[in-house]
Length: 506
Image (cartoon, rainbow, N blue to C red; front, side, top):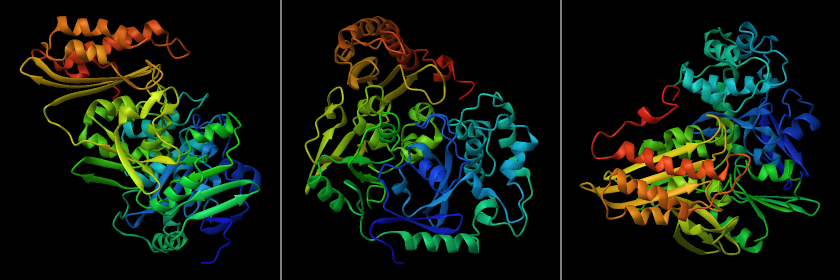
């Protein structure tokens, strides 16, 4: 399949779209609304929070098309190369009938002013294609990235609960209309054809685009990536774009050089090795969290409350780690269990503990031209008691005021080792060294824990900001340590549900 070297290719409504001369940071939403007048997708926040811009991206995974909702407002258009795209306009049938998702929204009065409706429809469509019988938890999660100011959500949730009950015409396009679970093992002729077309779009060599002085690289191999970044250490490395996208849409930054990791072979993989679970730099948060939660089920609630489904579908775990935000949740969760990162610079590789990556606010230990190739999470140590807690103002899609994680090993009732890490308490994700010293080698009892709670004031001097006051953060950090003790004490330990305000909902 021939193409211009300065063009991207993707499939929209069964048609091959080829676009030349693209600004590397032009968003997918700008293209939809301004270039091809698909104005169903709306711009509400331009930062991936409101969901009015939600679209669905299709990719070939395990010989099937995988459907995932993402935010078009912070997805750069060139990242669509080699993929399928579905917008709310894609759901129209040849008979001009509403899709079951749309009809259910009408019948259950889920739309009022209508501004947010197309985004809800696309989140519902992604669920329609991936979950044959979603329960209330799955529905709440699927809609977690969509905000509505009119309905109070009850009618939208009802519409989602009933969308799978509508009949589908036998001649309707199965890619759009066949719900999840229907003939799940039977790949339709239409889907098989689309899989073949997607395969033809995959590049054997990396993509390079030029637009004026701007450059966009999408390397096909790790070696190619390492070479490009070594030659262009001033380039911006782009994975999911859920943070970098805001640099453009909210901070109006110019990014003259962008290196996209999403098409780099080897970076999209999760591998189990003797060292642990190795998660590549392009693996989405959705896939990374699903995998890690089987090894560390204590992380499941925090993972569920980490951003929203569309953000997790686009964002990457390594991207969150590389960002190094003091309020990023993945780092304090992974530091106590001994996570390490693999760094690559040209042909050289090295590994360091995750906690050693961070030097100061927005400063890290990476050298010029060096990038994170993967994060390695140790296999579960069954002797370890582990918990992770997230404190924020609402359950869904909120940034933590405090995030805390604890990994404890006991020898009888004596602390053999304890690792404590907090986010939101310092300029970087940080271990609580003073509190650890108080606990290590001493009895795991209330008196010792109280002393460690007091020692946290020597470890941290948190700031007051819009999310929490310094006093609140200090109190919350200490109380989370106490909660951990209550759940892990050697006598009369409480269950997590007994001290979790979200236990009923979760």
